Image (spheres, rainbow, N blue to C red):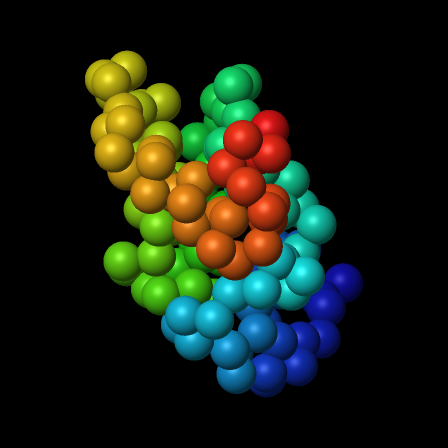
Length: 115
């Protein structure tokens, strides 16, 4: 069975991609699908996801719905996937930018409230 997709809401998996809002740079935490929110919060936690494919799903959503390549959620997810693939240390400054970004888009009121 094939699933019909609306031309304004396309997806390669269960996570919708809103074509009208791609790279709008205006992310609102209320608009983030539950699965992506869970992965993103996990990336901010002490035990982040260890499956690079899961991490890349969040990266894709952040790239498409955020600021594109410079989006901090996209950049951190890519950095974490690189860390998982190569077992090299990740960039602490990039992680800090990611946490600040999560606060700025409403995932938490303050940085210490993130998981």
